[in-house]
Amino acid sequence: MCRRGGATTRMMFPARTGRAPRDPRSLAPRSRLVSAVAVAMAAVGCAPPGPRAPETATESLRATLHVGEPVNADISYLRAGDARGPRLILVHGTPGSATAWTDYLLQPPPGVEVVAIDRPGFGHSGPAGAMPSLAAQAAAVVALLPTDGRPVLLLGHSLGGPVVARVAAEHPARITALVLLAASLDPAQESIHPMQQVGAWAPVRALLPRVIRNANSELMALKPELEELATMLPRITAKVLIVHGTLDDLVPVANVPFMQARLTGARCLQTLLLDGRNHFLPWNSEAEVRHAITTALEPAC
Image (cartoon, rainbow, N blue to C red; front, side, top):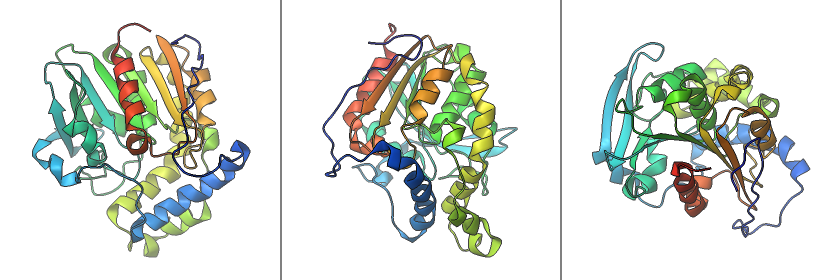
């Protein structure tokens, strides 16, 4: 089922949204609006789904590491599981934090060490302001790579996807496998909505919480960052799993063929399309995400 050259394994699951499937052609324009509205509305408590367990349940797992240039900040992360096993590094989207992965930390895959990072500019990590550079974001993840030769699996959700892809492209020999979960890698799918411009206006920006200010800054800078990353994607040699929902309004499923076409150096490439699922796969499709993790850690393609 796992083939070279971007072959797709399409597995269909019953929709859990309770809504009738929509024409995929209608999703792209709406996704741009929803992305902008999500940034604005999060400030007034319209939060997306999250883990089942309370986020405070993982605070005893927290540690901090200072990372030098280009990050030059203290980076906070959560760690659980088997410290002798393969290391799974979980990278959240925007906005977000390491606590998004609470359920995976409290029940880590058997024999696996799980590390969830607060990306620079979010959660307990510095700096106070945004760090929209994918190179800097990747450097923070690289600081968490083990130095003892253990296998490393990177899993990035949403904007965490291009972050882990950048790590895998810059350090191909150190990354065993990559899971791109509802990942935003296609620069052609990115645009700036007028509401985002309003959010960046200094008087409005000053009223927004840090997490929203930094998320908006990242989204507004993302397109040129992805254009640079696109030239690097063929360098990735890891085993790659693409997992995407067909009804993702925030990161359109049109990202999938772009990734399939660009990841030409991957040891093997598998795509899992979840029929009727939206963007919030870590929480509404946990069983499928855990299966992708297990599959990615298998040596064979």
